[in-house]
Length: 161
Image (cartoon, rainbow, N blue to C red; front, side, top):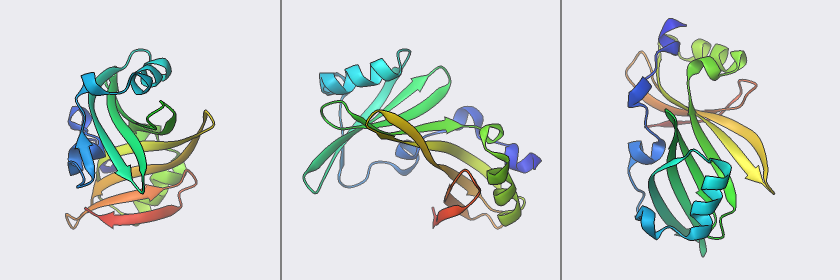
């Protein structure tokens, strides 16, 4: 359990920073973000400090991913060009995970070290709902995995990183 609780602390980075930009993403200078996007982020997170932003267009749909920092917490906010928030990914620590999630991770990946944890919140019509937790860990065999796990401890997906 102790190993599961060790985090990269201040070195935690969001998936955007870890994985770099995808081929279909473009960096957006913060001063070039649409006003509606900036205003929406500031309204939802009044103490936000903007860190970086990207723009992605897929199947004719454009969305912005804005990385902010609120205190020591890094958050990715996904929005439409009109400022509608669709997804929030907030970095958390292992102590913030439900017991069922920790138990599953400990059982499935003994002696693994957690690198980052994000709670992924779906936003639909302004209502925020926890969708799943995204956990990046290094197994005892030194394999880096990204795991999507629901609050009840059910593993949704596992991907090699």
